[in-house]
Amino acid sequence: MLAFRLTGRPDSRMPLYLYGVGTQEEKGLHRPDGFPVYQLFMARGGGGRFNIAGRGVLVIGAGQLIALEPGIAHEYIPHPKTSGELACIGIGGESAASVLQAAGLVRREPGTVTGFDVVWSRMTELWKALDQGKMSMWSISALVYQFILELAQAMPQEALPTFPVAAPEIRHLSKEADSPGQESSVSGMQPHPDAGQQGLNRAIALMQAHYQDDLLFKHVADAAGYSVQHLNRLFHQHYGVTGHQYMQRWRLHKGMEWLNEHPQASVKEAAENVGMEVNYFIRMYKREFGETPGKGVKQRNQLKLEQSLTLNTSTTPNPNPLVEG
Image: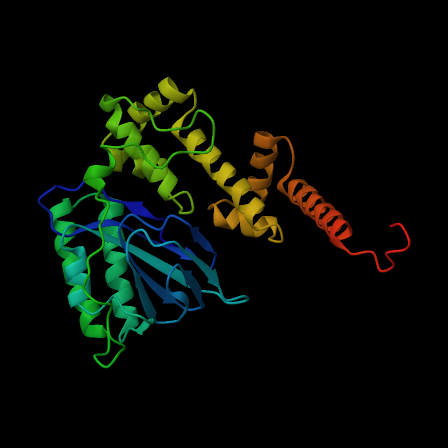
């Protein structure tokens, strides 16, 4: 598994850039707000289904690719009892829409990639370029363009038609720092409004967008343009916690929200959905909320059952109107 890696702030002149790349073992994804840039998903073994807002269900199998536009709500549910990896390559820039459309990668159905192992190794090279930090973003941008061309060659011409070319608005990394990130439901964890703390706001926006990914705080700091030490000082100054603690609390609160929305789900599913190991999730959840997630789920299910029974009792007509109910 290749932990998700983010690039730094792109030069505004770059028409195409790599936002981030990484892989995950078979686990679910839940992104109700979508993703800030285009995503290319590739399944290596295993597979699963994507529930995509406005497009329904798409099933991806081993050796296939799905591309998603920015800002589209989606979730991924892996096939049960299968093993494999799911790669995600984020691509942004003014020309991202036109390039990916012209290459035939944005399709209505998953596409099969010929020579899949070769393409997967190219994706691994992109990851190494980010992880090692020895290449400029311009050089990595050239690698991304080459990667798209190789994918275009590896996709069959007779596949289903692509979406109409209507480039959606892309939220650029260079602009994310100019405005606060998505507002948190956690009291006291909103991005700081001080315009001089754009790097801090950018770090928060990245954490909120990638809480499900295996994201290291070091790479958040790199993408925000700060050292780990300086970014931690900013977090402690404005929120009284370290950057790692902030990200952990965000994941725990998103895990609680997810359990509220999916009362029948298991704690293991909730932990995977927020990118945490299940035992660690349970321990930190209890420390944050004073109860285990399993106890909270049980109580909420019992409350819903009681409310349902009360509602049914109050709306059931009396079978004998001559006898008082």
